[in-house]
Every structure is written in C-alpha cells, then in structure tokens.
Length: 120
Length: 184
Image (cartoon, rainbow over the protein chains, first blue to last red):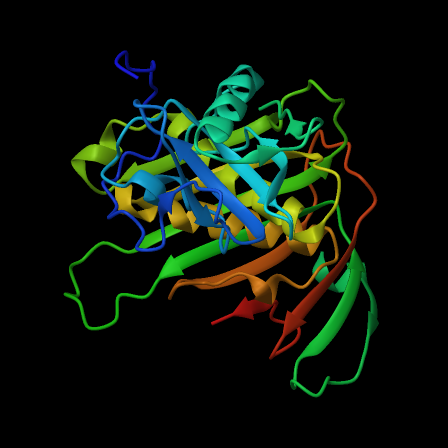
C-alpha cells in the first residue's frame, strides 16, 4: 500500500514506550482478547488485554492511529469480535470495515458477524 | 451517610476483610500516588471522581455529566496544562469500559458529578484506575482484580444530585471498617 491512511492523535499524549508484547496481527495469533491499533500503513498491532489503558502502549510514543479497538480470537484462530472501543482514540464504528479488510489482508479469518459498534 | 446506608456487616472473610453490603447511588473514588522518598516539596498526584451507573440506549453517550458536575484538575506538567476535559475523560472511558467488559455486563453508561485532582500527563492511569474500581464496585463485583500500580485508593458511597441510577448493590472490601479503603 502506497497511500497512508488518515490518522488521529491519542487523547493521552504521554509518550509511553511501546509495550514489549505488542506485535503485528497475524494468522498465528493465539486465542484471547486483544486491544488493537492500526497505524497509518494499515498494519494492525495487537496486545493482549490485561488492563484498562493499553491503547497508548500498542504503538507507543503518542503516535497517531488510523483505527483502534478490541478484538477476540477463538480457539480456531478466527476473529469472532471486532469493536471500536478505545478511550484513548475514540474512533467511531465507521472504522470497522477498514479493520476487517486489514485483518483479512494480514492473513486472518473474520466471522461474518464480528463487528460490535460502540458509541461514545 | 455511609453508616445509614449499611444494610449488613458480615464476619471477616478468610482474607481478613470485612464485607459491607449497602445500596448506594454513587461512589466517590480517590486515588493518590505516594510521595515515597521523593522531595517533600514534590507535588502530590491525586484524583477524585464521583460517578454512578446509568442506563443508556444504544446510541446515547457513554459518559454523561450531571448538572452539578465539578471539573477541577491542576496540571502538574506542561503537557497536562494543554489538556481539556476530553483528554481526562478518555481515562474515565478506558477505565469504565474495561470494568464493564471484565464484569461481562452489557456496557451501560456512567454519570459523572465530580472530576478533581492534581495530575501530570503521565498520570492518566489514575483516572483509569478510579473509574474501573468505581464501576466494578457499583456493579457489586470484586475490584481487587484491578492493578493499582502503586496508587493508593479510597472509595466512599455517596448520593449524586440529578442522578437516575440503576439499582446497585455495593460490596466494599475493607480491612478496617468503617473506613472504606479498598486497596493499599
């Protein structure tokens, strides 16, 4: 992809280090709940959801994001839920198709009814 | 107010905590970062929020503010000095949303009547922590699953003017009732 996605700055502007467990999404992702942030090149980084304020640490450095939320991977490796919940970035549900496309492009499988829109 | 709201006090649990069951409208949670061995002149980092749960339709806002809402956060660094309510609110959203998810309850909304403190830009986790604990306790869930990351935390049931709260049954865990401190 040559063109960059439009981005939005975090509302928590402290330049946290990137979390050591943050990694690009891939088909090998273990089952579980994750937070995700999509960067301007459409790559989706994921981090296991272990606490309540992880989005600023997914990319780190107060970097802007093209999308952010949470996703759930089941035991078969399929993404069964995608949401746009992130207090830090607060994207609307309009990002969900873009996230689905990116997950598929990155080798993932996404359930047909995975989208869980959230209103702030 | 707390004493009049107490419905029952059970014997100490194996964890040597007292369980106090009460029905409350709202909860005030105060978090402080211990100064430890830092300079006596260093500012104290703290925050206090008061909120209750509220029902909301699918497209209603997640965070609402009641008519008596008080917002007073002293910025402790230059970055925080540029923050507006929306920046600090992001911490409330993160914390409350996480708590609803952990409780596996439908994501309701919160009604906030107080947001005060003295915070630097690295202190957003204080609001995340306070909101997480407040929501879990108002849902009657165990808030000890939330990591305090060194912050001390105190919660107090209260009434909230203008609130139309959901019925809640609050369980406070306390090492020293009637003080309602929940974590060290």
